[in-house]
Amino acid sequence: MESQDQRSFVSRRRVLKRLVALPLVALGVGATLSTAQAADNKKQFHYQDKPGPGGKKCAGCRFFRAPKGCTIVTGTISPNGWCIAWAKR
Ligand code: SF4
Image 1 (cartoon, rainbow, N blue to C red):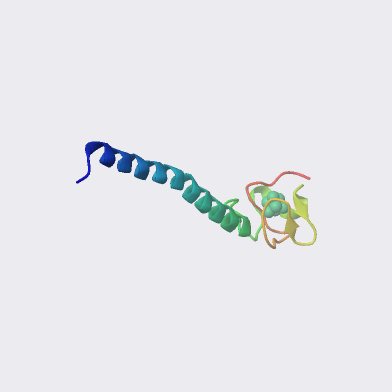
Image 2: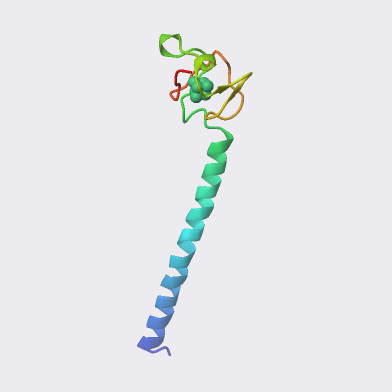
């Protein structure tokens, strides 16, 4: 039969194990999310393949990298596209 001290010790040990495991799980989830977001962040920046307000286009944005790249939005983009990060060249 376990004494009160033994049960208390086991309980503390379980709590400590969980406290140590939580940040590791959070790190794993965070790494997975950032990898997924890095793979495609078009949604995050509301990217569209057509010009934005006032006819603004990627081709006129300081972040545009010819022929179809961007320093902010990942993947292939259109020179005629637009996103909320648009900034005049
Ligand atoms: S930041 Fe947005 S608007 Fe500018 S080039 Fe990249 S996708 Fe186009």
